[in-house]
Length: 302
Image (cartoon, rainbow, N blue to C red):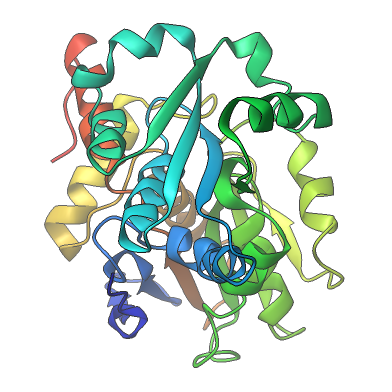
């Protein structure tokens, strides 16, 4: 399996009549399926699993999880057996109609579908032991991929460009990516995270991995919660692609970029600021989102 981190080029985004500069780092270009922060998070976990002699990876995710798709693809490429514990028993009969789960299955992933109530126990020792009794020994990768090794991988996102920007922005799911960015940022820089879901738990989760305080979560752009969208967001994503040739996903990067543009309009950033947005991939989720949008008679993402 070939990853191309050198493809993560930086493109400037044209901002007419504005006194700030906006750039985007194309982490989505690293790999077609294990793209963006998924490559960064899995890099050292895969090396660790190989070093310790594991043959199987087990992880957790939902119906349209970028993480599930990435682990399945990476597992196949690196000759691991993969197991996905999936939130929602009803999804077992929907694999053929679900782009993400179908892709993961095609890449050899074995599924265990559990109720949402059982899924809440995904970090408990008793549940992990039950899974080991069922599947044998495995290397455990947390939901979303965030652990210390994932943070270490995300610290490499800014290796060659550290210090050139005043603000570094990224979407936030489980907090691993922003933690890596904070750890490798300069103290004079400000790292802004745009959570894709509601809830104040992220503040503490991120604090567990970082010591610097030059960061902030911007919580106004989650669009009512994880995987929730509206026509305004869809219109923005489609217009952004038309104008700049860059696709955005509706769960993470679309919301982040919408927030950045809104903050620019509101003069949040001081005059002369250089802003870097991290494109964390996630584009595989567009097909699943479009299927939901069609059912709701809403415009689709182009």
